[in-house]
Image (cartoon, rainbow, N blue to C red; front, side):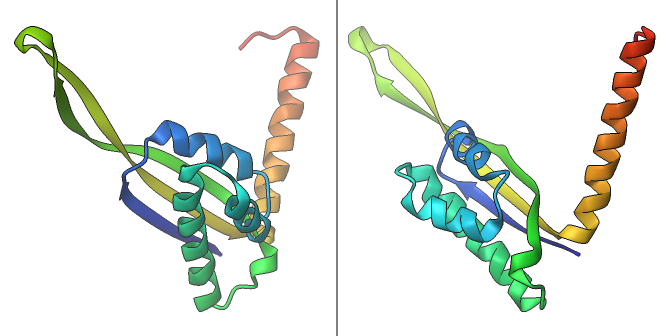
Length: 136
């Protein structure tokens, strides 16, 4: 079973959020909430809030939180607010305030195991092709 949440129009740039998301991608969701709570980056608060939301969605649907793993964490770019600062001699210095969307998908381990097995099988086929000298 998959549980997801989408947080839209966060006033944090996608690059800053991706740095924090990469840190927790391989963890269990319950442990990731603890790690994000002590992470000294401002983007960690936004990601922690989204993660708590998806865990609450899982609890509402009756899924055991200890069996959940991350299936997908996407940090997508949202719209950009174009702003400018006044420069010298009447010129304009434009910049963009970037916003983000966070999409978190959690899954039971049963559904994820088949995905891991298929990934292992694809790695084996790549290795076997390399051993035979086949170029793709």
